Length: 113
Image (cartoon, rainbow, N blue to C red; front, top):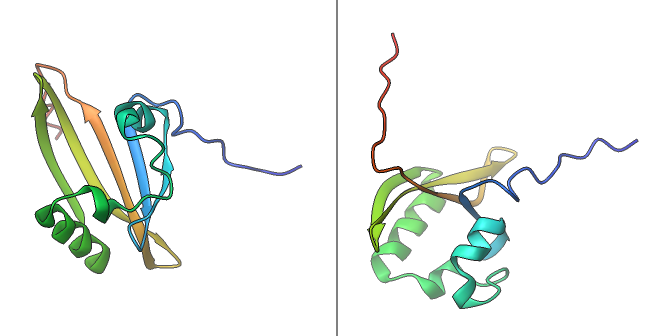
């Protein structure tokens, strides 16, 4: 019997987009597809074609360094946190993962000892 990991990211309530080292989108979960539906099917498209020069520079930096980037945005009164990080295969940067989640109006902050 094959022990296959389920596509757990498919139905989670945040948008998950994955690209390879060339910036080509190789995976989008349901929420990501819903979020970017007006652009059509983005699998196989390149991130560099749909981002401005400042964003392209950040993508190149993350791919080169294997780093992470986190920020918030607000659009039409909806705040989101964007988390971008490199993914690796055999300790070699193989692309980026972007997770986008809607933030509640009041975001609790729990300080743990």
